[in-house]
Length: 395
Image (cartoon, rainbow, N blue to C red; front, side, top):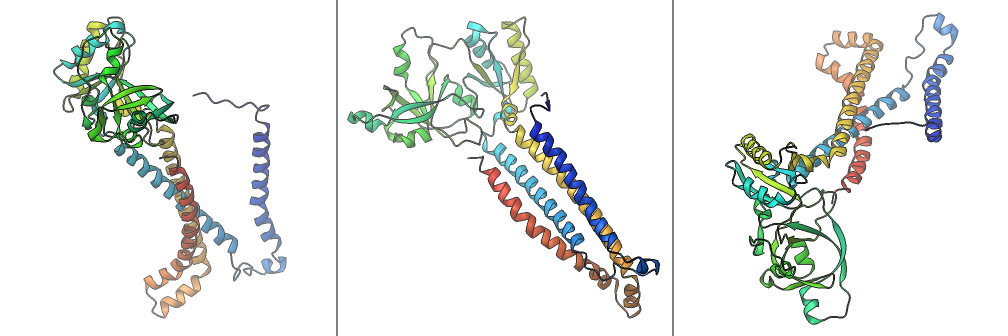
């Protein structure tokens, strides 16, 4: 990634940075100047302590703000961390043993390559289709339910964003998907008759079936897709075909018939022999393609890459949370040391009168505890609002 900054194109940003730096410098220097100018020279030369007894409300306010920022950053880091863990758990759950292979170099040998890979000793299954969890081609199509199409209604079909996916008969097995009703695609050889495709039917997910009133006991009824009735062969359990920023959309899986000449090969490897499975797939690839090395990627890595921005956000929040806690801790140390130096005679008198170390410690801790409480009370609600707004990005 290349970063560039053009002053002529970002004049407003440049002016804002300069003005912000000047304002910060003025504010940082104003308080010490006002405090020092308020000292009476005679009192200073006489050795008195002009600051004794004065309430350091500015100092306490800065400490409370530090704690508010630290608490907010810490909460934000925890929210992003737990959300990313939740996202990973909500995927299929078995994609860590599935690899995706670009088949551009195979040409017309795609189906033969897939069949040969399936016979490898450390390969569980292989299929051709769109990898789940990384998005798909969503198109606005008019889809009517089986009851609407059967009644011959004159009302136009409702436009719905539907994911149209091409897949072969091994797609569900390879990805570990479950059939709710009906049957999977049958293993068929190539068919020259284009009408053979529509007669095999399609698979739909539960969301599409529920939206268009396709009951499990009515599998085989037709769904009107863009003016063409398509029989529903089976219903597949819902799964995430897109990042979790989006809700589960209606999905319509159409069969490859005849076998495809291009597409993505999905290979499920033996979970206990992953490296051996990769070696088997690479050996088969070398038999079909001699001038190009195997180009593969694990499916879970492809899915995780979609949340790279959220992972960077978590790292940034974590880094700033650590820095904020460190600065706040140093501030508390300095504040405590200053308080002890001011109240050294009082501490001595209390010890002489029999005060315990715990009571003396609490004497200073209570002054800091309320600052911590105010900071937490201010920081957590604001951080909660920000985290809630960020979570709204996830359906």
